Image 1 (cartoon, rainbow, N blue to C red):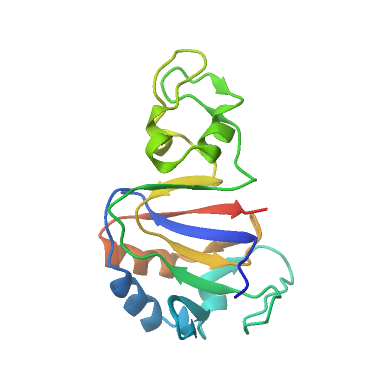
Image 2: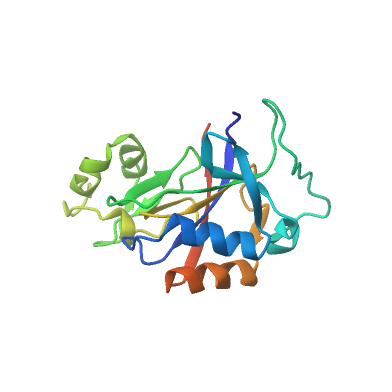
Length: 188
């Protein structure tokens, strides 16, 4: 099955909070953001629902959104991550330059190091100026990366092409008990 290079991620601000994937699925189906699963063997990926285009606000005048699945071609889909006991760092090739959250000094190589680090070594990365350990969850990634245990991925949404509507964010808040944010990640 085709995987989108460009992705819009929705994630809870309480990054280490486990959120039931089945509760997310039920809520997103109720507002018609998603419909049925795309593949019989992949219950985490869904076709976009009837209300998808009203729950995502597109910034351009005429976005080219393919909502029907295509074989090896771009189309929009939604993936709901399964609950995890670990917190993951999600980022891609569009990750922005960052500053240390301790001393506020620019870190020219840290974002690349974090991309290449395995999940266990994320919290051992050090600032090149002050030497303090960098916590990826405390960095302002400017909507290009995040840390979380649960998220919703919307495939084939280009960076800054669209933002989630208030109704969608409100639904996610009701399910999780906390606010949600979003980030754009380019995988290639």
